[in-house]
Image (cartoon, rainbow, N blue to C red; front, side, top):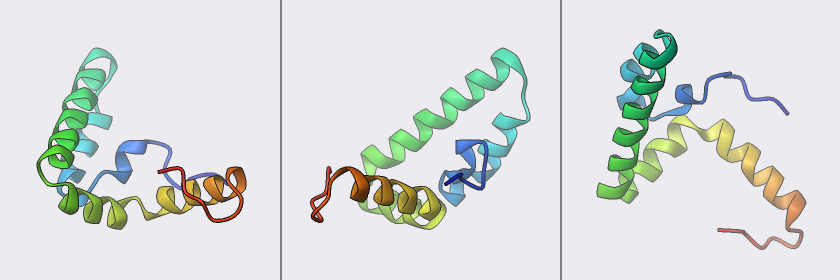
Length: 83
């Protein structure tokens, strides 16, 4: 199964959509730096408000979460979860 989006930044919560789009529009070092800054902001959200981050990712990255659950079910039969 392939994901719809090529760039993983498209799966960031909606509040980061403009930053993700701007980061992906850059080239070279500027792009790497912008993506790193975006990652740090997303990490900060997760660190400060785990519940809000989880809900935001369930909305923005449901396709990724579903894919990972299918992989997990294949690797860990019997309904046990890795996390």
